Image (cartoon, rainbow, N blue to C red; front, side):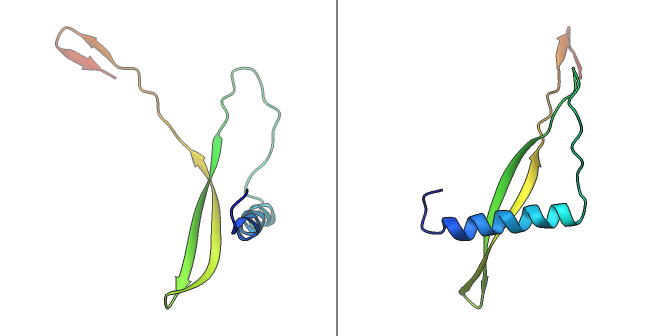
Length: 79
């Protein structure tokens, strides 16, 4: 990261990763053929107290998209 706040954001991400590890949230498993994986992303947020910057927060979240196959036959809609 190149922003002036890069160190603060990196610290927030490191803190989130340490928190997830300490709570044993996930488990890495070998990927098998046909297995779908989660796509992860970061959500960044700044907290303020009485209008004064307090800290950066970072959360690791799974990006969930649903692909629904829609078939239209005649005048019926099937999901």
